Length: 266
Ligand code: GLP
Image (cartoon, rainbow, N blue to C red; front, side):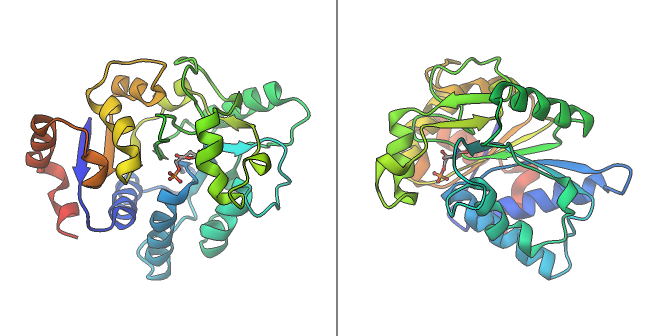
């Protein structure tokens, strides 16, 4: 695990990190680069920076295949708060990704179990996810894998935890009644099988979840802790989210600037 701790624009750092990975992989028509893509407030700045990189001709998404992590169940795709709308508005409509390379779970599938299984097959057919980008819920969820999710789960429908419904009500006129109570989400095992994971974690509200992720034991009570078992996990985070780390842990990661030094310099 690596923590990149910076207060200088987490979204921009993440976009540069992603750009480097895409360029290193030299994707082409036969060998596409596969991204796992998140939604959520923290991701907005990252998408802005990625769009900027595209507009400055520093990055193309022509040879990218994307798989979104999750989608609410029961919201029409064109609902202003659906993840389909979020992705279109914040990212896809501004870049050169091909429509047929975009994958988002269908939250209106007649058979959610089959939808989940089909999504896994599509990921496998694409060659697996090269870089999974995610956020972190206040309660330690990743994608919509809520506390007590199976740590060996694959894409499926999931009931949302009351804390998540409250946290996400800010997108639904602060009305909990309007927040969908179930979602389709990649599973923890789906995420563990990706080649690399990049998590974006900002703000004091995420401090407990980050502390568990970095210093806690692997536990289904804090699903993100399963990522300790991933071979390549990078967390880009700010000072506020580090509030609950021990001084020793914080200093350890601050000193480890090695291969990421140039990102700090941005
Ligand atoms: C939502 C999404 C997650 C996201 C999390 C954090 O519930 N399903 O994928 O990581 O919330 O979102 P935010 O960045 O808005 O705090």
